[in-house]
Length: 59
Image 1 (tube, rainbow, N blue to C red):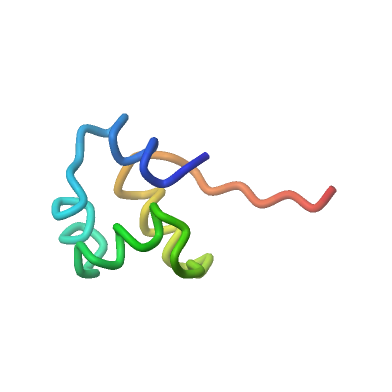
Image 2: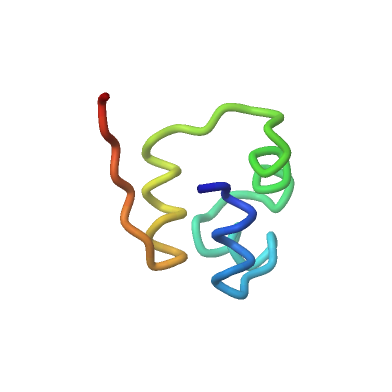
């Protein structure tokens, strides 16, 4: 699921999500626009912030 969709569904702004996971708003914007790669650790933090579980599957 896209980061922006998760954030919006949780009712958070980029600034609010950034504060929750301790990254600048500019990082959130880059991730949402596909400008940079994101670590699994950061995905886990985002998941916790928006009350979602990160599940990785190898198919």
